[in-house]
Image (cartoon, rainbow, N blue to C red; front, side, top):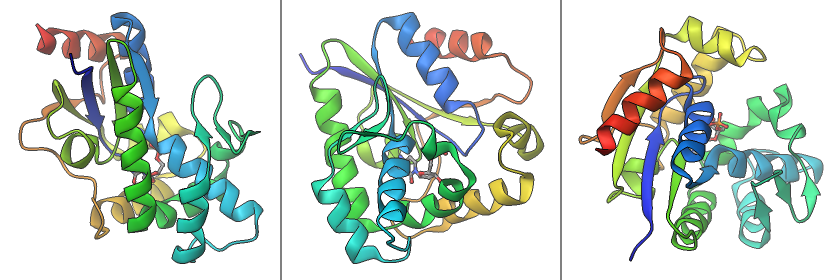
Length: 204
Ligand code: DC
């Protein structure tokens, strides 16, 4: 039997990671944070002195990188769990995630990860229900007001978060958008438990 996938997309701070993790624990499924993969490549590139706009060099890094996201985020065996949440990475990651060749590499690995899981995976990102798993068991789009999203992130102010959202939604390669058949949940005034509950109800 093909392992199942719950695909969760949405802008930064919409609650994707927290909800996806809690949902995976509730269901006993695996969890995949695809943003962490793009962030790990960004960390590797910057550490090697490569600019986020150097698409060819970054594509090479992505093609040979060994990336793990659980239990810690590592790239080529180096733990970058804390580093990938720093302002430097926040600012550069959208440019790296816009590189088509990088996306192709990551999409392939994300599909392989899901294929390897015993029951199913809760996968969160920007293009999960539109590109990576268009036949997902369930597609969810989480959103929240910009001010609430900035409050949740803490490390990014509204301007920064807004410009990252714009970059992620207007890029040519697999921009963030709602899948037509996605369940849309506005998480602005909901707790994590309420969002998880709403998603579990959709599964029944
Ligand atoms: O979810 P996050 O903030 O950790 O994601 C970091 C960046 O990676 C985000 O600015 C957009 C990009 N991203 C993407 O383009 N596609 C994904 N599936 C996940 C993240």
